[in-house]
Each structure stands twice: as C-alpha cells, then as structure tokens.
Image 1 (tube, one colour):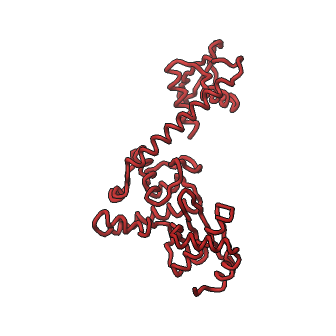
Image 2 (cartoon, one colour):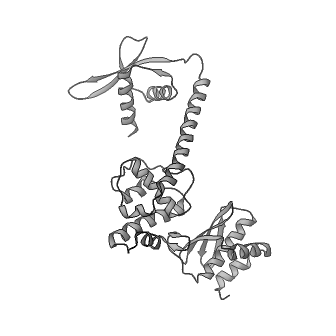
Length: 299
C-alpha cells in the first residue's frame, strides 16, 4: 500500500483494535458514501442498523478526523474512510451524488434511455450542489429551494423541515423536495420524474404529518388544561377602521363598550397566545379579520 507521509502518520495514530475494525468495515463495503477533495473528505459508514458520518480534513501536512459517533466504532469508521480514499487513489466525486456505485447522471440516463441535454445537466448540477450543501451543514433553506424553483417563496432564514428523517441519498433528497414543490403547486423539470417515487414519499410524509398534527394538538390541550382558572375564555370582537389614509384593526373585549387599537407589543402577544391556546372566542367575521391580520404581521 503506497501512501503519502501525511496519510501514513494519520493511520499510525489508530489503535490495533480500531485498525482491525476499520479494515473489516472497509472490506465488507460498509463505506457507502465518500466525497470531497484533497483538503476535505466526508464519508458515511453504515452496517445494519448502525451508521456513522465521518470527516477528514488536511491541515498543513496532517490529517485530522472526526465522526458523529465518538466511540471506538466511530474511530474505526474514520479508519475505514481513509482506506476507501486510498483504494480510490484520491479519485472521488466532489459532491455526494452517487447512488450505490453509480452517479445520478448514470441512473437518470438509464431510466430515460437517452443522454441528458445540456439544460438538464445544468439543472442536475444545481441539485447536486444543493445536496452537497445539505450533506455539509445538515440543513436546507428557502434560499436553496429558490435556486431549484425561482417561484419558491423566500419567507425567512430559518432551516426548513421537509422530511421525517434526513435523506440517505440524493434521490431521497429530491423526492422530499418534489413533495414540497407539489404541495405548493411549483413546477420542476419533467425529466427528474424518472427518479420520483410518489408512493414511497407520500406514505412517509402522511404518517409524519399526522404525527406532527397530533403532537401539536396534544400540546395545545396540555397548555389549555394548565391555564389558570381566572383566565377562562375571553369573548372578543374585531373590526376594521377605514379612513382615506389607512386601514386599522380595532378590537374590544365583550365587557367593553368601545373598540381600540392594538398599540403595545405586549397586548398583541397576549392576544396571539390566547388565540393559539384556544382562549379567545369570536364571531366568524372577527375570526377572518384576526387570521388575516396575523398572517400580515408574520410577514
């Protein structure tokens, strides 16, 4: 095995047990994913119900390794990853676009029974870059999806929650994104339907969304039950005051005679909290005005 000094020094830092276990994992094909460049390599080692993500970084003339499993098994996974790098002679995909032992391009061209066009290949590169970003950061944002669909709304800078569990490969990644696009009636290139499994995705999303909905309702019921007796249910009414210059939302409690503006943040916070926890009661017209107002405030 002909390796450079930095790699050899790195491998010599492992214990005999870690080396033996890493060798076994590598020989049994447990390194299911590896990508990167000469400075940063990432891998995924998986065996039965255990998986471990690894990262190797070259700093100066020394390799440093880390794994999300901090035990001896994680160290063995790092060793298996460096063995995979050696076996590939440094020839690795820059992005984690492999599906099994084939690239996503190969999978698509086989399913389509043709070569990809230049435009299709360009879009696929965008998708692969988005997946590589996800693999690096384990998060996805509106700013990622807008690059795949210009009509996708960029509403905030918080990570999106698009799946019940993180996707294992780029095909699962794309299937979850397609589900989000379809829910919002957003278009995407037709050629990628070749790797879309709607039945697989919808089954997982339906179960997950139902569990989330049940969890939300349980939380609301618990909060409602814990509310102090003196809070009770507050009857309120909302109206719009329209002038030549502006439109303002006015409100009042049942026992009050006149409507007033929402002038303080604390007042708005109190109304929102009571509303979310089922502590406000209002007529249908007020419900429409209040819900529209909340959407406008959220933006």
